[in-house]
Image (cartoon, rainbow, N blue to C red; front, top):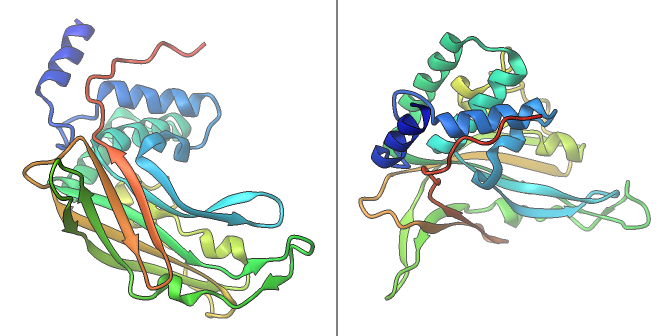
Length: 250
């Protein structure tokens, strides 16, 4: 019976359409990831891409990222959050419907960008050079569809929702995207932190980028994010709606 239900789900679902309930396979996948002690961010899997990384004095760290909120990634995220926070089925359903209402019919990406001074390899506390503010100047985003002829470009509606200027590198990068998607936020953590006094050479910004789902959506596409100082890109594939339930965790 379960196999039949999953087959029916996969055979009828548009991978970009939010159905009345989460994807059973992706929900279970998210639950299993968090049951192994991983954080909910790990459930994003291929729906999260790093746009930039740099040395922080100890290791290379992602400093910019893009998260695609689609039915599969939201199903996994909510499954992980349910596992971590012990949500009831009613709470899970309420959050799924709230997210669906916000995201239905549009491609939605959460984009975190930064402008950070370099760090000395010998003295991690020493900054090297000025902050490259051109990395955050005149930011634009668009979709690129490859085709047998010329690529197709679709502009994204880009809205800056949060900015942080601080003396601490970690604080500048700590801009949780879910603060702007209340239905997906952890319990008690649905509000952005009040910005402190803007002082320091580390900058972080968070954007929401959206566009109506194109009529002809290719299986593979690229999101390009550009500014005066940097060009960034991330390539995504449509969610695999035919994935089956993962094997039970041991």
